Length: 383
Ligand code: PLP
Image (cartoon, rainbow, N blue to C red; front, side, top):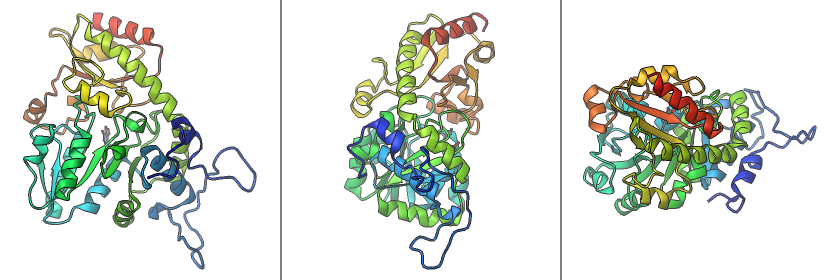
């Protein structure tokens, strides 16, 4: 557990993981750009690809404090984080059980790369704990979940998955990108490893590509051993920018989450919207579960426009809300998952999980809510 457990969210965001400027007493962390450090008579041999430059080492402390873990590592992208984590715990002959509703890039990584390493995998048929239990094999070494999932916001029972893993001696990992630690702390629910696309809420301004994994010191050491070989570290300049961004993580995500709940309720009653996917709506099938394991329902939602309205035309007609591929910035953005995050899946695979061509994924920003509603209404009129 993190030693900063008792600090409040915004105190952790603003202060933990600062590199103190002992020389000039500046208010913010100095940026250490050296890619070469003293190696004689030093305890730590620092090198960017060893994930241990001063800025990397200290920012990892902030992430560990936020996820309430002993340790953490920062990567060059979310995919670098997830691939390094998987390859640290899976070798030839091992088996991964993985949720079927998952970020498309993760699906693609598993399908394209695992066969080359001789690693077996099974995608579940659903996201209930029974669906995971049903596909466990004697060689299963890891269960990986994503909740809320991208883009349909399904909710997986984190505690039940952690319990299942523990009862079978199988490690568990989660993609916590959509919730962020502001809304969900899976480690407190028994999950072994938490990963993030830090490109999303951690960065929060649509100008950083990064990833992170948080876990026990023992697991992070194992991930580090593989990470230094794969070389997915993040440049110190970007680490510094990420630290600055994360100072406002709590403020941003709370404001975005508040906006998302209001918008989801409004869209749910909108005559031109046929379906809204948001775990904070009482009509969401796992509303109670989401309420029990999340402190807020997050700022991602998806919706389908009624038949007859063109989702592409709708997006093009938006004036304030941007049509944009990534998510979680302070500005609201929309995207068609079938053309972006899940474009690499086949039509049948998309149909199987319910990703239709009418689906619009909405990353809710910090804007004033009435302006967002106005923009959506005028775009619907022009769709
Ligand atoms: N996990 C989720 C839920 C994502 O949405 C993404 C990116 O969209 C990733 C992982 C991959 O992260 P990155 O693009 O930073 O490699």
